[in-house]
Image (cartoon, rainbow, N blue to C red; front, side, top):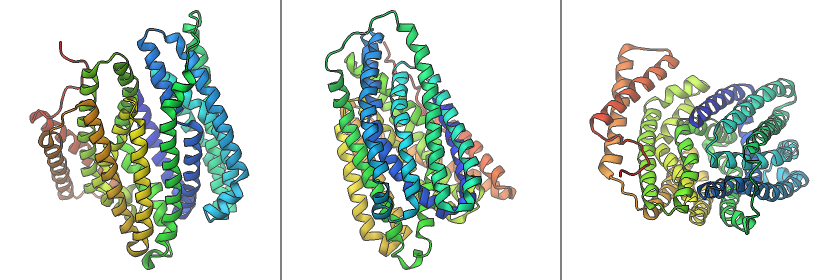
Length: 493
């Protein structure tokens, strides 16, 4: 369910981004990405990692066979998160002029920044409800809520763009952020109704007044929030610095904002699209691992960690090979842009690193290792900013691509190494990395050569056939080589 939901959301998101880029251009997408970086920063502080805390604490209460106590955990979390969201909203609204003119260096962002706080309280409380439903393994409320929210976002923004487009890209950016806020409100209302229905099942059982709930929530959420907040703050600074430093490079001074928009707003969403299944597994592993920690079941933690790392490598290596071979045609198909196709191909080798880093980061938080992930994220962002200041003015967009290579390799090695150490997992370099890599690259090149021989000119048909035949051949070879494991988390008796 979660995978299907993620695929629907990502597919709709990419199609919508394609439509939006056609309406407001790559410069408009670049301006929106700058405002969106502030949106991410504000939402990170507003949600404060409390969603993960709710999932873990509720999972622990379920493991103790006291599900009625989840209500107490959720109430404390919502109380805390509304205070934080309120503070964030006030800071963003009254500081919009300073942020837009001084920090972002573009007055066109101010109107969008002033409407941004409207979404924060809805987003914050919704994150608590999602954490609660994940802990209870009830995915349908989250799935329906997110799909309706995305549908509302697309419908509202499409309506607004047609009205605001005559007033320029600043007005369009305002309309997009307003649409995001109204969509968050729709999603919140659906989750609230789902919670009211769900809580009736345990209403007869009295919730216990647990001692130290707020302390436990803060223990989990503060390192996560600090990491995300400082990381988002540094990434916001990065998003401001990248266009400015790209403009200093002679060959890209005229289109720096467009290049930035192509990477962050066009190429990266496509590269992350196939990771929907992995994100679903990572999300659902948090309560499973939290229960295993509560029950001190080290074997389940070890097996779960090993298999998710192997699954991520198998998926990531195939997707990286697919984007390397077919990236240019995907860029032409979706954006009618050779530049986007070049970026997809250039960034394809880091796809397995991005997927693996994201998955291991989520599992480590389930193992109470949020302090380590905090240090890793901050170190990475600080190094990226230093490299941006040094390299972009001399190397342009190629310098930013090299920075992304280094950044993803750095965080991936640290997070994977920590997870392997904590869980005592065992990973085979030959079977889990080398063979899948060679297989993924070979099957994509073979199918690509065959399709070129057939002279298929339609890019859509070409990409569909490349994906279907390549993944089919890839899976068959992995099965023949006995590389594909049986993904059963329960240990053999």
